[in-house]
Image: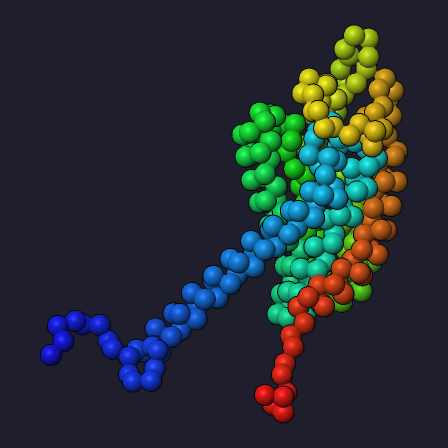
Length: 256
């Protein structure tokens, strides 16, 4: 006679009850979702770090020309692929938001631990760009239209146009004009000059000092429209890449 109150599975069965079986299935689903999120976080972070790199690392690199051009185009890749996966497999319109949220989690871990914790750069020099509003926009267009073609045209163009305004509330204070030794420059540039980076590739950055063009002007809209146009092309390509990666293959009974 057993003294334990635990239910013993019947012979030939791994679970003692239907509730235990459903609990195991739910636990497995949560573990798989966590793994999927971490894989998306890691791969998107490496992709963004390698291609957007310095334009997103430093506040003095967030200029009016290259930053609003390069960063949205690079970020569109995984957003389109994730949207393709979630929409084609589950009809869930939040793939882009999930992707940029995963990237943002990875970026903040990297900036806080590596840039501030190990090398002592201040957070206001190295904070990442805001991408969540653009993810919302892309998912809303897909939800309302139900068409990936419309999303590629309208959503991707809005993706490029929204990038600079979405980041402006945080960025504006660093565009404050200041004068040092007779040179007119932004507060962002002044912070950058005080925190020297031995690996800073200054040759890829157009440093502008002493003119009002330094602080914005009409180059930003041109860069945003160009970024939106290229983002359309990137969306078409990476939607297909996402569809290809999420293809489910079945084995015919004859081959078993």
